[in-house]
Figure 1 (cartoon, rainbow, N blue to C red):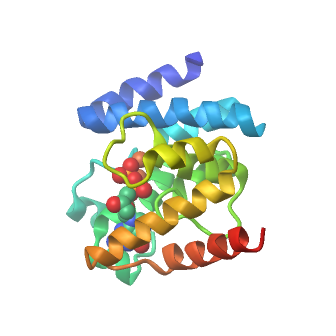
Figure 2: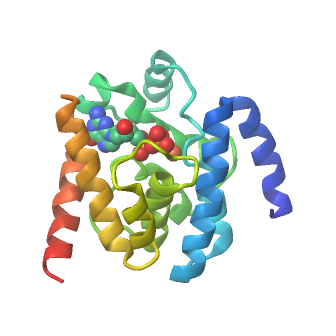
Length: 193
Ligand code: DGI
Ligand code: FE
Ligand code: FE
């Protein structure tokens, strides 16, 4: 590991629970592998992977409080399900606490939960690595998506969004506009191929 990231890793070990910390390390290494395949800066992939869930273990009421305190907008879906805010709040903490200034890294953290239309390669890598990292075992179609991730990343993004939306609909969860719009974009992109 890059020496500069040692402190961040140490800090994350304290602020995340054990499973979330292990997931974080898994996402970071998986993101590095995808970055090798798709010609993206390995250190950016590593750091974005490490920090993507840095706000995940903050209690929901505290997440809401911190967002209000720092003028981070809260939409209807986030109001109903504050855990969604860990992406926006994580991007803020990456800048504010960990001193990350790179916009590409911050955007990858910001978009990692809902996805977005026209994501950059680094954004897609974090979105996909989050779903396929080796500690994940419950998600649908993992075997197929893990393989697809290294063959056609746009297709992997689409498959993840399709399965996530199906799960959200089945569980009657509020759907963020961004999640829906991102899905429609990647669905069309894959159909037009
Ligand atoms: O933080 P992680 O668990 O590693 O992964 P994540 O940040 O992708 O969050 C995963 C959860 O977020 C997953 O259960 C699907 C959910 N999610 C994604 N988009 C939406 C959503 N949940 C709701 N309610 N609405 C969304 O639009
Ligand atoms: Fe997350
Ligand atoms: Fe994650």
